[in-house]
Length: 287
Image (cartoon, rainbow, N blue to C red; front, side, top):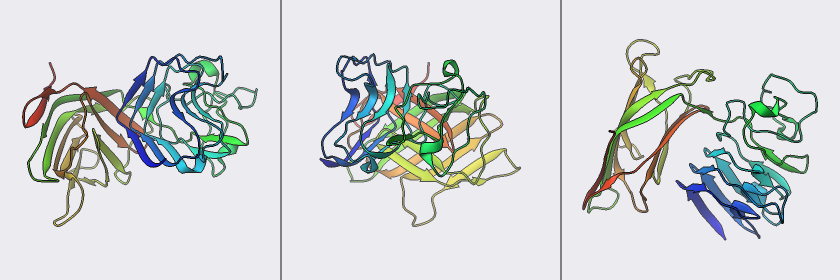
């Protein structure tokens, strides 16, 4: 099996003896992104390192990426890599602003979160375990590259969302409005950072520009003749309000509830909303 994307799912309450998401055999080109994997109490009858996401030994770890997920409250492990090689698990939220618990860390505890390096095997999160998120299985042979990780926004609220399903192919439309606020542990955001917008099966990376005074408003407008689903987007940092418009979109495969997220650098805001389904459109308004 190859060329599979696992996206936009909520995976919870699993008691599997392997993993809530379990990858086995000679698979490759697997993308696991924008999922919420949480509150899974895995059985340890077969594996002591059963996890929310687990790669068994025959998998090519280099052919799997685990990015932009929310992985938290999984026991005993959040992510386990039994395969040889490096698993790219960067830019995930682990349930703590300090990142995941790394059992392979040095015994000497340090209250400083380590900085990322070019050698993932040397990155050992030595912050006390009580201040950390889910465990990752990490040794010098089966490496989980978890650095950098995402910092959850203090607030991410969707006030209104609408999905319009058109008859013409690749002509569906999306409108999302809401409010966001960076968390206390955020290092701030820069206009030069990529902005990743996800609405259900749609995901796009854009570069925004400043509008007006510095740090007050960001804006994106799709260039004339340009590619991509996003027509325009704004973030007003004074009020925290954001507004996203998409057209030329293909909403095939969208499922309800719909996961909506905005990632700016290593700051992530995400919400799953249950929309009202009508014949040609879905709608959501916050109460």
